Image (cartoon, rainbow, N blue to C red):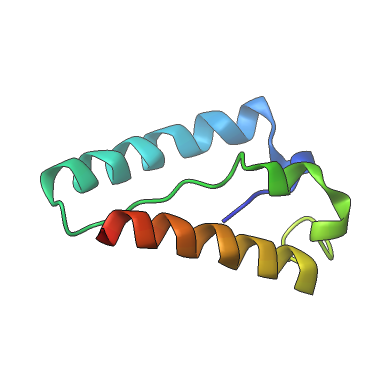
Amino acid sequence: MPEHKLRLTKKYSLKRKSIVNELNLLQKKNRNILFVDMAYDDISNNEENFYDTFHLTEKGANEFSRKLSLKIKNFLN
């Protein structure tokens, strides 16, 4: 999920680093698992994509869905 740019702080990055590392290890061990980290995607930099710092607007949700579906499609092919 993309993160609002106001939430992308050094403190936030330190907290999520271990979780992301674990998910990446899990994905490497099992090729049937797809972990997609979109926290720092371009969607995060556009205020129009967020209702508040936690929720996407319809525009943001549509863009996220489009990008995620492409990543899943590439994973399956």
